Length: 117
Image 1: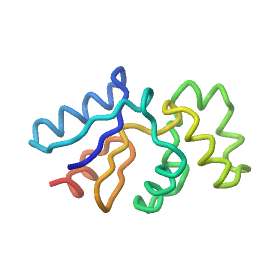
Image 2 (image 1 turned 45 degrees about the vertical axis):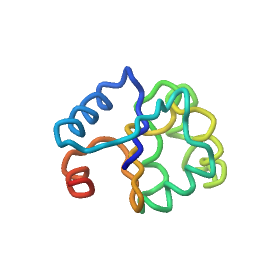
Image 3 (image 1 turned 180 degrees about the horizontal axis):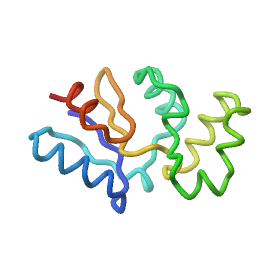
């Protein structure tokens, strides 16, 4: 069973959940705003993902823009980035899918099909 972090008002999350339901893929849904991953979880997800840490940031979200992170992130250490991500679920790219041996950020149908079907 996979864990899917989503935000209920996010249209991308809605599309992703619909896709999972249509494919008959079981999942545990977690509200990323109310129950966001902590720093230790984020570090684990990052290792599993094989992705650059920047891919874990919701670059189109209001908090990202308000904090001016497009300019600040390149100068921040990984530790600082993890600590920041852990402060607010709305900074985390969603949907965030956590499987036993993989992690996906965002909804890219081909990427999801490769890992989940």
